[in-house]
Image (cartoon, rainbow, N blue to C red; front, side):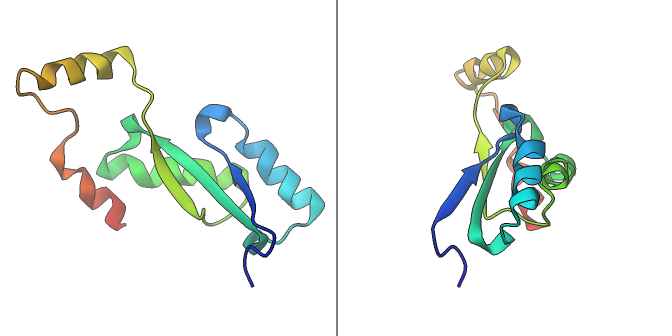
Length: 104
């Protein structure tokens, strides 16, 4: 039965802890299905050609082939803040074609 003890960890790339979490899980010998593992992608990774590489960049140091929950980190850069300000002028924050990025 997966997640019997509800062990969970969050490893957004911004924490710079993915390699340590992956090493710790390997060192203690915890089975992958006993940990609910989450990570976050940056808003800047939300493009069809960037999602896959960004996920791979997280999976590699975590020493796993999947995470249980992926979400989007929404800490904005100055450029992204300017883009949001542009919404008032009818500009788009995110290209509406980003959805297909999650199909792969």
